[in-house]
Image 1 (cartoon, rainbow over the protein chains, first blue to last red):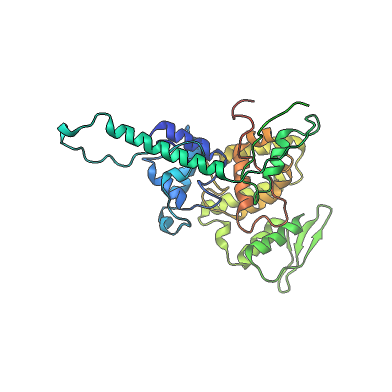
Image 2: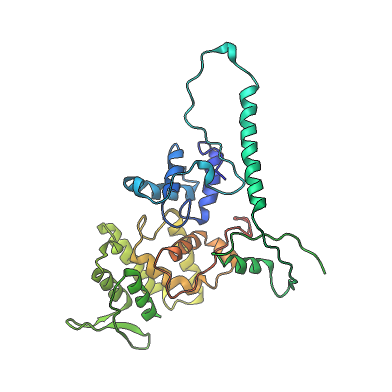
Length: 170
Length: 173
């Protein structure tokens, strides 16, 4: 998860898209999740990202209660839409004056390996989760698949998400 | 309808003794008969009275401006939303959608009675909306989903499912 690089317009766009149908980063009340993302932004989003701006102004109004909001602050990669990585960098470290020791390829590759590892870990965890597969015959004229999806995901306590694995024509 | 709203509101406010209400007239305007005072008539009047009884005045707004905004939406609920015609529904939803574009709650940044009564009043409309319409009025849907999950509000009303995965990408109609 994550929003990409929140200090770039692309990352802000992901945030805006994410907040289109949500009032908060997590759940239905302001929490440390919102504070974590709020702190990662360098300033208010521009007015064309209206949902991010709405959320930003709203969280700003909670500045005094920052510490008392529920939840635990987690690293940015834990929030946001699935499938997007967090690449927001912290403030740049002090440059090393030691020119002789620069390994031109070493450090970049290491970073990629790390993110690859995390990606693989997460994919494995997702695939390992128990999934229920149901086969059912649906008359498309009478019942649409989006209706089915709506009704199934209505069991919010029991159903996290649903996906159509395959369509077979009879 | 109004009576169920008032009893849900009482539960939300944690009022221990439920009041006895009656109705008046063809439109079933709710009436609260107090032992010591005159009868209170009207949904908004009784609701505001309950709020003060429960000592939660912040639900009516903190500043003078906020209180005015709350009153504006309470009036909107009674004068425009209740008993509106089918043609008016789209206008109401469009205005509400534009209003909520930059606000989390009706009064801005705080949850108030305006959100509760507007939620109760608009529920029967939102329950009927198709997916495309829910996406067209995206801010109303977002606000509605938020209020119905607010602890203690959704008592007598069935939850409305708001699909997270967009069936149609927004902007393509």
